[in-house]
Length: 445
Image (tube, rainbow, N blue to C red; front, top):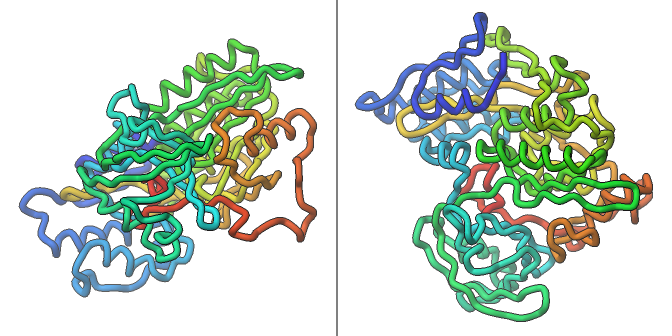
């Protein structure tokens, strides 16, 4: 069985059965059209969650008729399970836009705060590409500072916890005037507008010329279908350049399709273990027939020389990103540089109903050595803060500089002795989140 998220996405647009093999059939009632009454929707969520949730035996005993919305039913069911921070209900159209088309709604920014300073961590959506973002068209760049929104200084907005409110509401056509100070110190005002834009999943692919041989550097923003062809092209470029060491930048990657994570595994370590285990997915007792391994495959663009790899991680590194980090370790010397990841060692099937998709956590994921359950996140081997003051691929940027030191010197620069690691919030860049957004896009504005 290949437990592919693209197969599961079909459920999001209306199919009622995920057939994963002769002994694996995960079913859900068909609910659409005139059958979509509020009572039927609540019962759908209650029934499917009780049948297919990974921790079905720990769900609360609730009556769906005691609640007003499907979301309230889901929240009540999973309330006793601290490991479940992830089950959610989304719109079917939004799921297709993100996973298949690689689009989301916003200005096209990822922003972070340290103290009372707000900086741009990333700009998503190329100015000259398909469906560009408002931020890209305005010429905003990583490292720029946001000084004010509609004339209100960010220091006041942060102090009064109104930053998100100041940039809302998150609806197409919302416009705000934002003051920007670039890295050289020049200030200008730009008009930003919320609209759907296309995320470029692989914005940076570089071969760094180093004294000990070329080092590949790749930034991956999310695991969506548009990433597949870009990842294959990047791997082909690295293979042609003779890359034996790689820096994989997942610092802002909140996850996405498991099928794309599996493809990345094939590209990085497929030649080392063809037909050997990449991951294992484990379901609840009712769906134990779906417990199958995902096997590695060698692909035309697979890296055949790769011998060492560094992954850059932050608290926003989640889900499919963590799957990749955890699953690489049995197959190639893998280091992590940055901060502890989010902590999501579980996956979700999508069950379409009416105009929505229910995504309860339905399986856990372990690597070839049986390792998983990193609900507290994956701790870095080398603790380094984010450095949004410099662009991606700048060898002086803090996280990349540390990664190169690990690869070339075997050392983590500035590593604190145990018990003395810096944890003060004012020393770290913390990604600001949209509280109304699903976890995978919460850090995209």
